[in-house]
Amino acid sequence: MIGNGMESAPKKGVLRALVIVAASIFSTEIILMILFEEMHNLPLMTENLLDGLFLTLLVSPILYFQLFRPLQDNIAELEKTRDLLKNQRDILEEEVSRRTAELSEQNRQQEMLMHDLKGANEELKNFAYVVSHDLKAPLRAIGSLTQWIAEDYADKFDEEGREHLRLLVGRTRRMDALIDGILQYSRVGRVHEELVRVDLNLLLHEIIDSLGPHEAISVEVETSLPELRVEKTRIQQVFQNLISNAMKYIDKPQGEVRIGCIAEKDDWKFYVRDNGPGIEERHFERIFHLFQTLAPRDRVESTGVGLALVRKIVEMHGGKVWLESAVGTGSTFYFTLPLVGSIDREGVEVNEA
Amino acid sequence: MRLNNKPILLVEDDQVDAMTVKRALKELHVTNPLVHMENGEDALQSLALQDRPCIILLDLNMPRMGGIEFLKEVKGHAAYRSIPVVVLTTSAEQKDKVDSFELGVAGYMAKPVDYRQFVEVMRSINTYWTISEMPS
Image 1 (cartoon, rainbow over the protein chains, first blue to last red):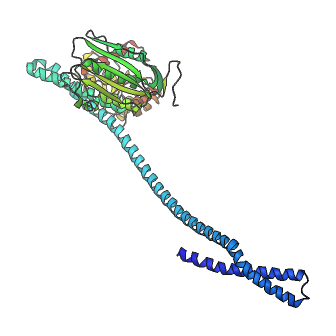
Image 2 (image 1 turned 180 degrees about the horizontal axis):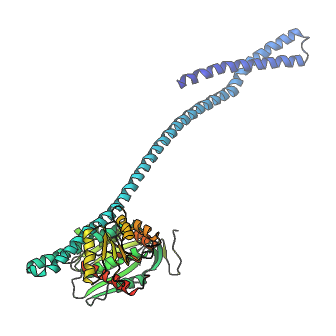
Image 3 (image 1 turned 90 degrees about the vertical axis):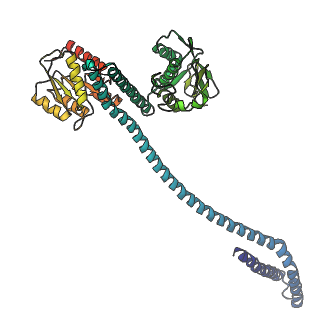
């Protein structure tokens, strides 16, 4: 369609240009002749005119091909380019409006998704809280009633009956600890604490003190620790859980727990190393899940909340947690915290470069 | 408690929790009469009808009128404002604690699952309110 138009336009143009060129040269000659007053010599003028006509016919195609044709071609070329551009612009405009519509649809969908997610998240938070909360009341009743039966009717039970009641009370306590665990776990991320400067050297000292002296286990901080801007209780929970875990499972006559920190390119790498029983590699992922324990609960009283809590806190702070372990020789738990927001030796806060 | 003849008002909807309080008070030889109401509304009515209690033991999660609402009513009432209120609850929620103390509670105790621990909580409350002077 466009091709046909382009072909016929130059042909018309050539004809028109030739006529214009010839006419203009011829009329110029007449004017020049009049100006030089040759009108009185009619035969000479006629001869000149014929010469002029001949000259004109000779010159005009040259002029045309040298001057007008290239111009004409240029114009045609330009027109072609203009049409092409216009075409492209139309396509672009169409594309832009299509993409705009697509984007606004995507935005709408994303907003809806965000709204749903927020709702689901809020519900989950409330759910964890309400469940834990409402589970506690009947549990407390079971615990109390069992204790009263055990106290009030102690002489009515034989040894086996008393043992069963003792187990029953023990289980309600365990259930209570589990519910506290869920509450604690759900609170991380739901309730945010203020970020404060924490000197980890002091914090670790407090934590180790709070875990109490243990004759058979030595707990030591091997390296100097940094000062960080963090949620203090959360970081305390991380170290406390890792260290108390290390101490709880130690099976050697002389237990050793070593804590330290290595400065890496983008973050601090902390470690808690023990000489406990070690963990098989196939359990490496599972132990970080809520309520997963490796030892039977009757042997080592554990809720299975600690490491799940550690992972949640560390990841919330932008770090990661993992372990290396050799069965029989011990385990090393590592976690990282970003350098950003920490405080260097001169007390200057490290910010993003 | 210090004023032996004055009743203790217990506002608690859970039957076993109420039994726990009664049993613990008996074990501690607290002889004050115990008035037990199951929600805030009934408790407010009993305040108008009965003797002024020397202390109110208040649960937070209750039907019809909850503990915080009841507290607002009591603390907004000139005649009841000075009665000490001790919250006995399962809620460890920060908001409940803040709300309670902003409404002027005298104490906030988490109900332990273990009955013996509960007795210790009640012993502390009893000792404190036996030592402390109160407006008569």
